[in-house]
Each structure stands twice: as structure tokens, then as C-alpha cells.
Length: 262
Ligand SMILES: NC(=O)c1ccc[n+]([C@@H]2O[C@H](COP(=O)([O-])OP(=O)(O)OC[C@H]3O[C@@H](n4cnc5c(N)ncnc54)[C@H](OP(=O)(O)O)[C@@H]3O)[C@@H](O)[C@H]2O)c1
Image (tube, rainbow, N blue to C red; front, side, top):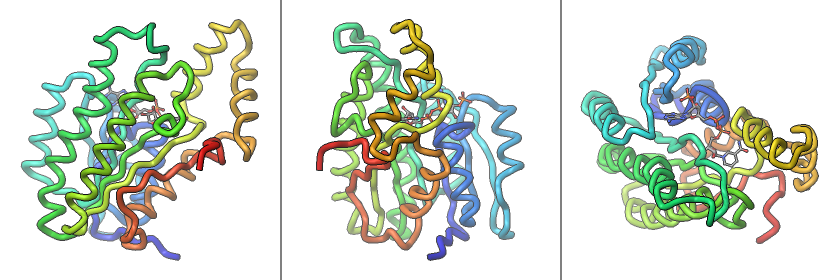
């Protein structure tokens, strides 16, 4: 099966490393023009140059944004959409802070809401007009297995991501007649810098080595390993393609079998 995204334009959040970067790379490899978004301009510059550009139609660019500063973010993204359109939007941001329900303050919940929900809704609303008028579009949300089975110590993810997938399901119903699909990926444990940082914190708290935290984690996964970001990119590229035209309103786990529920 050949995934051909030639002529498609994609905007990918949090794409200077980890899952977002792997998605951007795979979309570019499949022929799309990609706009990257993150804070680190130097990295974004380098990645933009390194992305595949096999077809003459491919033009990659980047936006320097900070999802934690909504007012600035909204200005930058509105300016982008005043000059650009996208066919594929990948809603991916940094993960929320770790913690339990009682450790977190209302301010923490508000901050997580602004980053994980508000910025996603805002960006999608800017992108979707064009998708609807051309009767083709793809919205892909990077979510988490936490929406089905809440993860310990990640209450902000558990609660706000559940709101994102519920919103995505409602949106899929509304824009389905216009040929726009909306899907959420339920992320399991992926070998990224974020996971390394979370494991480091856990190890410090439990006074054990980070490798022990990692081996406990892989022990929970039926495939006995962490996900490789490239594998995530393959799923996203498939969902972004014509081949996935009949998949919408779905929450698709990519987790090595981690979720125990059906
Ligand atoms: N990895 C996992 O196992 C896992 C599991 C479940 C869910 N997830 C979720 O999947 C998403 C991606 O995870 P990941 O592991 O790829 O994370 P990551 O390695 O931390 O990458 C996060 C990306 O977001 C960018 N970013 C961070 N803070 C930002 C900000 N304030 N404004 C704009 N961009 C920002 C980072 O680049 P800059 O630093 O350059 O800004 C980077 O490109 C997260 O929401 C995470 O919670 C991950």
C-alpha cells in the first residue's frame, strides 16, 4: 500500500522532537508539505531543511510558537492562516505536568485546559473552513490511553484529554458530511524525551534508577517494549491519507497492547 500525500499541506504541533517530529517526518516522506510548530527556532530551522522534499510541490516551513501563551499563540496562528491553508492538521502539544488530583490546583487545571484544549479548538476552527469548502480534510489529535484508563499521577492528562476526545467525536459528526475526518490517537508509552523526563522524576521520587522505572513500564506492555516514534508516524500518515477515508470519530490506540479494556 502506497501512502501518497503529494499536494497536501500539513500543520503539525510540537514537532521539534518526539512524536510530533516523527509525524512531520512521515508526512513529508509521504509527499506532504509540512509546517512545523514548537518553541526552539534553531531546531525547527534544521528540521525544516532535513525533511524529505521529493516532489517539486513540497515546501516546508516552521512557526515559532508557545502554547502556554495563548494570546501570543493566537496572533501567530491567525497570521499564518491569513496566508496559508492546510489539508491535514495534527493537534499535538507538550504533555501536561504530572500529579494527583489533590496535588493539583485549579490554576494547574486551567493551564492544562488552555494548552491541551483551548489551543487545539482554536487552531482547528481556523483550519477547518478551507477543509469543508474543498470537501476534504484531516484532523488528527495526539491524545493518550489515559482517556480510557486513567494513568496514575497524570490527572491533568486523564481529565483534559477526555474532554478533547469527546469534542473530537462531536466535531467528527458535524463535519463528516463535508468530507473532513476527525480522529484521536490514544498514545501508549513512547520512547521520547518527555517519557525520559517523567521517568527521571519518578525514579527520584521512588529513589530507584530510571532504568528500573523503564523496565517496570515495559513489563506492563504485552509487546514488552516502548513504542518507537516512527511507528507513530506511520499511523498518522495513514490516517492523513485517502486510504483512511472511512475512519472518523475514532479513538485509535497505539500502545503495544497496554490498554486492557476492549
Ligand atoms: N511519549 C509518551 O509516552 C506519551 C504517552 C502519552 C501521551 N503522550 C503525549 O503526546 C504528546 C507528545 O509527546 P512527546 O513524548 O513527543 O513529547 P516531547 O518529547 O516532550 O515533545 C514535545 C514537543 O512539543 C514542543 N513543546 C513543548 N513545550 C511547548 C510549548 N510551550 N509551546 C510549543 N511547543 C512546545 C517541544 O518542542 P520545544 O521544546 O522546541 O518547544 C516538542 O517538539 C504530549 O502531549 C504527550 O503528553 C506522550
